[in-house]
Image (tube, rainbow, N blue to C red; front, side, top):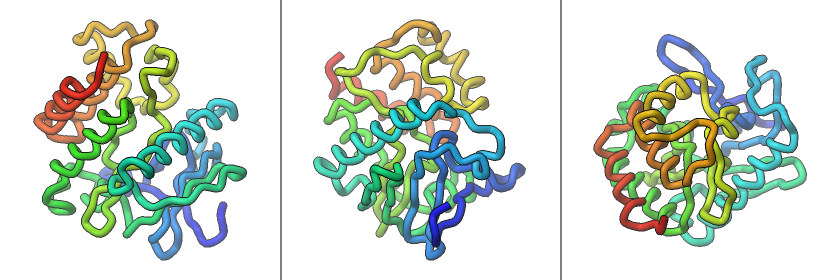
Amino acid sequence: MITGFDYYYNNVPGKGLCRNNLIYTSLISQDKKTFCQWYYNDSGYHGGHNQVVDPALMDEKFQREIKFLRLMGKEYPEHVPMFSIDEKQQKIYLEIDGPDMWELAGCTNSYDAVLPDWREQMLEIIQAHANLGIYKYSMHPSSYFVVDGKLKSINYFFCYTGQDTKISLTDVMSHISINRRKDLLPKMSALGIDVDQPTDFIRIQQLAFESFKTDFPAEVMDAACTVYKNTTKH
């Protein structure tokens, strides 16, 4: 544990306090102004449900996080929180104004009460990702914070570009919650995606948008699909 920080959870209706992320250990400063992504497999936080237990894989996730966070910070700083990185300790400190968007919405889909124009802002972020050729699959609503009325994106550990080697969904199952896996399988079948075969990143992005229709309105995710269709080369 980092001095002055506490574990950060989401208080989910009917479930209580749930870990905020399956990969890293989520921490928040006691004044709620700094969120820390600690790329460390902390058993106290994950409560015996640790999913990424290989240190090499954890390091890969950290390296992807800082690579794409830095890229966004350079090209589209308005879409990510201000941040600092402790590479030795594998900790990323992000400046925030309090809990994430999902938590502010009571861990429901009531985002309008938190940020009336969140749809437009989210699509601007997705457009920025497409402009940079980033395929981002971690889109859970807890991946967004509201800072000074602006939506800010985090969780770049599950990102790829066209220069990366293709992956299969089997390769990354440790990144995906059990509940989302249940949702993914029929949607993969509908899209003709074989879980064991390397798949084009754009098709996995399409799958991600389909899956996150459980968390966001379908029209927003359909608009996100159109953004990628009209922007990226594939």
